[in-house]
Each structure stands twice: as structure tokens, then as C-alpha cells.
Length: 519
Image 1 (cartoon, helix red, strand yellow):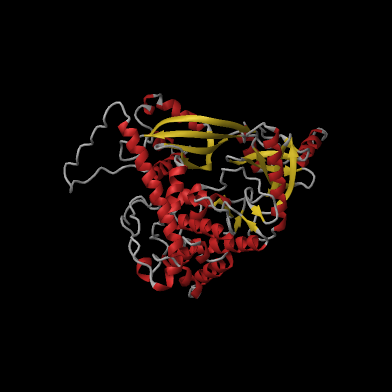
Image 2 (cartoon, one colour):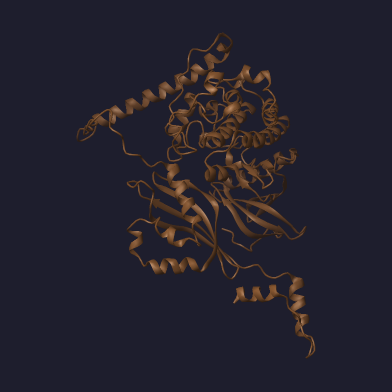
């Protein structure tokens, strides 16, 4: 694996890791030939088989060709494709930004106005991509970058497909993130621009509601695919005027969905307060009626950004003008029923073949008794963020976020350790990796200017009203040295030493402060 300060392809100097995923690592790097900062995507060496390595190289070159076709202000530009140590490296535009996934993780959900503003920009880029014959295939919050001024850009066409290119995905594998796939993709159909629209609609849904339409069961992706294949979208409760737009993007029938250009027009109309175009209502799914758009959310007083207390929408019989998509939707429902029946059969066989009969669960004491509040995955992610936001300045409060077993260690040592840290930055937003485990990336800024980046696994209690940390495991650590002073500063210092005796250097107040900090 590459490290900070490595030189890639004889040209790109690595400066800091920006993110890590299943397909590889993204670095901030400096192009030493053009003296500009770039983002460098380095694919992981997952298989040493020469055939698979060659496929990876072809896929990277294909990605470069695809990206070269797309020139749009709301799409991240790709500058170059290189081969380094036999592995593909993609050189992209560096955009100081945060992903929409990180923003959702921090704030829970966004306002309809903010979602419309971001969505209109991304829809415009997606429309240009589809016009160029490109299907993105992995539209999701993590692939939408947002700058401080609100500019949104669609990125990572790494698994995209362009018309005329040879498909390189291996048989039996699907490309994309399960939680944002369209129902037809979950059933094994080929990706199309319409499936991009469904994934984009799921992305906007997650930004408005705090979670995707079918949840995000990362621990059991096959079960999630079965739910998606059934096509039963949970009705949004915070979308307000965007509810009909979501319904038209999440229509179970691909032929009935809006195209990217129509989505752009609808979202732009929403940002200006203009009436939605008539084609939105024509494509909307049955639950997007004016009555349902204003229905209060069940459990609306619960935690922001979760749909854990919402109930599936009971779909009434579709009106006459919506009968076109009924047969298509019925196939999804039939597939879901078949999957559920198969699961029941497997369960019965396993129970009959067990060595001992299952133990019956006791009946609840009372139908009207108040159940104990159960902690949810979103609670653990929120607790991880809150813990590191307290550090290092509020280490005493952070200490109280540890479980009693963790607080049995020396409190003074804990506080002293965090006093040596100048700042803590969460560079990789928390994500659930188990029922009560959270993976998070933090950057510790040392007083000498160096930084330490760590990926940590936090485990939380499940039997307390507020999540408490029971263990912290260090998964990966890398040190980023303090930046060297510019060459001009070095020249100035050498000239200062050459001054004759009696020459007085008048240093400003700021220089003394910096010296004190370095000491």
C-alpha cells in the first residue's frame, strides 16, 4: 500500500489520504509537472491473478475514456489515467468539499430547499452523462460532493458504462450500492438511464428523510436486495413540495419515470417556487397524492433523520390513468412474495432438523404496557460524532461518554493524553458495521504541526438510555509529517545567517508566537 510522500507514476506526490473504499484509496496529491493539487484514485490489488489484473487495467482505461466524454460544471473532471506498479491510477480534479453522505450523517436530514438546490445541479450533470451515452450505475450520497459555496458535483464514474464499450463486469456480480439500487437491477436486469434516475431519487429521499427508501442493511445486502425487488417504497414525511418529484423518480415501472432533463426542470422549478411541470404528476407513483404529501409522519416526535418508527404505506387501488405500470409493479410484488415463501420454507426445514425444539418466547405482560426505548444504529453513529466533537477541549465531558468499564482506567492519564492534541477532525463520517459497532476516521492535529490519521472501531452499550463506549479498537494509523517551510523561507533564513555582526533583524510579534508554538 502507498504511503504519504510516495511518488506515483513518476509525477504525483501523495500528500494525504482522502478516503478509502472497497475498490481502492483516494489521495490528495501534487502534480509536480503542472504544480497543481489533484485527487488520485488508486485501485486496490484485490486479486493477483494476471487475468483479473488485466481486467482492472482495462476497466480503468475505460473509465478514463468515459470521463473524457463528459464536460460539465457539475461533474468532477478526470485529467489522466496512469499505470503504477501494474495497477491503474486515475487522476481527477481536486475539489475541497464534503460528500452528501457525510452531511447526512452529521445533520440527519436536509431541508427540501437545500435538497432541491443540490439535486438540480446533479440532475443537470446526469442529464449530460445520459446524453453522452453514459450510465453512471452508482448514484448515491457518497458520490455527490458539495463545496462550501453550495456547488454540487457528481463523481466516481468508476463502475459506469458507456454505449459502445465492452462490459467488463464479471458474470454473477452486480455493480452499485444495494441501498440505492433500482428494483429492476435487484432483479438482475441491465442498468439503464432510468435505473440511474431511481438511484438518484433514492439519494434525494435519503437526504430528506435521513435514510434510503428501503433502509440500509449493510450487514445483510442480500436481504436488502429482496426488499428492493418488491418495490414497496416507504412514503416520505419530510419532502413537502418535493414529494411528487420523488414519486415520479421512484416509480416501480422504469418506463414511467422522469428522465434526467425532466428531473432538472422539476427541481429548478422547486427552487424558484414555480409550479411543478405537469409531467411530474403524470409520472408520480400512487402514494404521491396531495393528501399523502401533507400527512404527518408516524412518530414525528422521534429522533430526526430516522424512519425506524414509520410504517409502510398501504397502497390503495391505482386510478385508471395509472394502470399502465400496474403489471410491471405486480411482477416486483410477485418476486418479493416468492422470496418470502422461499425464506419460510428454509426456516421450517432448519427448525425440523434441529436437535432441540425452539423455545417459545413469553407473551408480553400487557398490550398497553410502554416498551423500553431501543437504541438504533443511527444513535450509535450520532454518539460517535458527539464524542469526538468534545475532544480535545471538553475531554472531561468526553470521559463521561465512556462506559464504567472504560472509566476504570486512570482518568488523569486520559485527560493528559488529550491535552497534547491541538485539534480533532472527523475526516471519515461514522458508519455502522454491526448492531452496536461504528467505524469512524479521525485526524489528530499535534502541537508540532504533524497529524495522525486513524480509523477506529467503537463499540457501544445497548442497555443504557444513552450509548456509552465500551471499547475503542485502532484499525489503521498513518502519520502525516508537518509541512516543510516554502523554499523562499529557507532562502531567507540562510541569508539571515550571512548578515554581518551588528545587523539587527526586526521580527514581528507573529514570529515570536510561531517560535513558541514550535517549542
